[in-house]
Length: 356
Image (tube, rainbow, N blue to C red; front, side, top):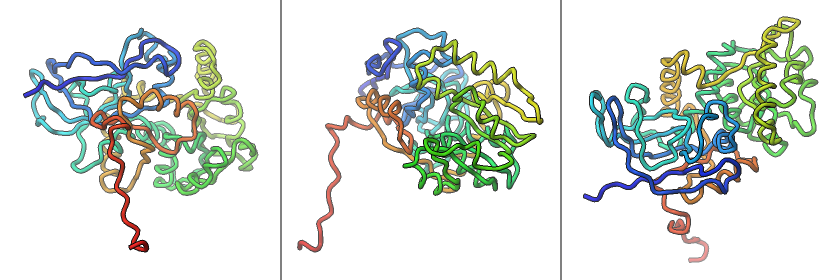
């Protein structure tokens, strides 16, 4: 039997997408307490862009070359020493931060989450970072209550879509900032759209919002704080605006530190900063519980995450360019088994009965 081959998406230098390369890599072996998986799906996310630009705090210690890939859905194909309770061929998922844009990789057996049978691997991959972030923001950080009035910044993005969907399920009254062309999507997901290019969200709701979720961080969150009602809370979880503006890491960290230091503000307004990695480190059981819950919702089709496109290794650099350009309404997912675009058989068109 032919030995399987491994390919990976490697960062050769920090900066633009041209610093990415798909290379052949040694096939990993499962060590003690590990499983090796054949990767079925691994998202290509905006956080990968941040990591590639050397602007992500959790990966600042890394130096090229290293492999990208924040999440993974895979099929167990090798068990390490001391591992029990898993079957070869069983599907599992994990959040890895780096290393999963690959054909094969190893995972700690005590950290993976099992997937229900019949769940689509690419759809499952979209839940690991973005939807778990949204679920924990709502239920672990903000601890939202029905009928609260909530504003979601970046509502057409991956986390924004998840916040709207899960927020609607939690009985919230929702608004979402997005480009004008995404207004229909925001409405479809249960929110009232706010065109941030034409409307001032601080004036939309007299009295202010109960909760604002801000993954953009424009202006250090000051305008979001102004839009809160007395006693409201701002949940900050990112700094997309700083990355898009090509700000340096120090300036971004100073802006984040300011939010930490504010803590409690006049009028009882509160600032909470969320990091999925910090939350998982403090409460590892929560991550698995929350992801399992999301997988259950996916299996029952209570949620239907959008996959913008399933891509091959050869399309990853272009996927990064598309992420930087913005405007996507779904997640790009690397599927290692997918052949290059040029080798795919185009779908057969059904004959037009009117021409027969």
